[in-house]
Length: 65
Image 1 (cartoon, rainbow, N blue to C red):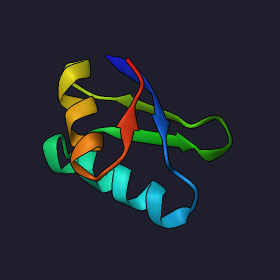
Image 2: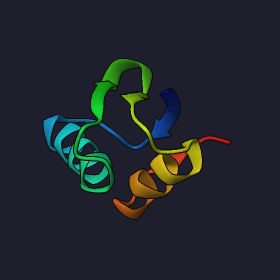
Image 3: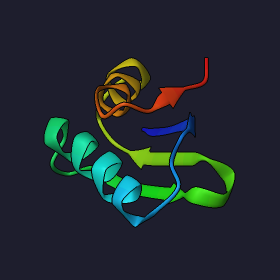
Image 4: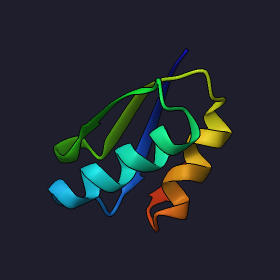
């Protein structure tokens, strides 16, 4: 399943790495794409949207509803 999230506060490569690693910690097989300019995180994962959003928020980023 593909999950797309609008995420506020991502500005650099460290943000990309942090978000990617947070999602992959919950689903090691996830394919994660982060588009900084759009504040977009797209993940192909077996996780439900809520779990992906929680992983991103645990890193300190705000996920839009």
